[in-house]
Image 1 (cartoon, helix red, strand yellow):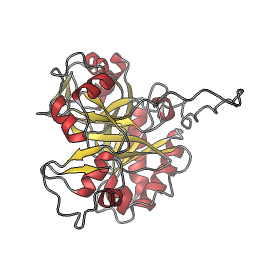
Image 2: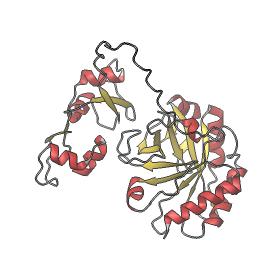
Image 3: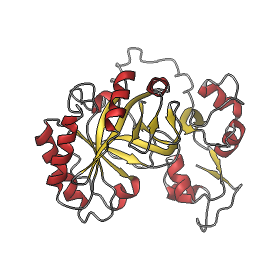
Length: 325
């Protein structure tokens, strides 16, 4: 899994080496919005990335109107900021303005014209999971288009929605990264996708798993017990390992072992923990939880939760209730 951030003039970065030291490998930087607005902070952010070995890329915030004018504005700024060559990630289109009347048509035209204008074949398309499930029909996500989904569940790489071209997950807008003042959007790759897949000049499909060699022995020895599956969990303010263990129906020792924690009492906000889970795992309902939200967090189907727990009314769950999944 490769981790990154996305920033604009709203974020102040004081130490890019510290950012890189927090395992941040790429950074998408806002350069344009609509047909004429440009972000004056882009140069500073790009130079900082270059100095620390972080791969920068540029993004455009879409507004209603003709895509062509926005493409020309974005392409010009990408060239101006040296974001179309090597050691850069693909340009990204940020589509979230509800006033755009036909977002699928807008995206298709924008992507085709941006490729022609910049010579960069690969384009990232960012939207939240609500857009991907209710407003968009990504038939335009063909070769050299990758999807970037926002869902703030604190589980990097598990946005609760899947697509064969889904490569990136923005898992929080309140991330904390050394060297960045205040909160910052944090991102992680999804599944087998990795940074080279959306790096200019290196774009490629995710690697397929190597085929198993044919068995030579007609009576092989029994396979060892598989390692327990784990999910990623991002530590939030007020979290303790014991509280996380209770919530997900596991133990402090299991989380500490899977996450390599020398001292379970020493965890930091934004730290990624590995939480073991498997068949018959449980989850303790927290204040404000809903079945749909829990299902998204756990990466399971909401209907499965309802059936597995014989919930007559899925809207009636209470804090402290234990659900099996």
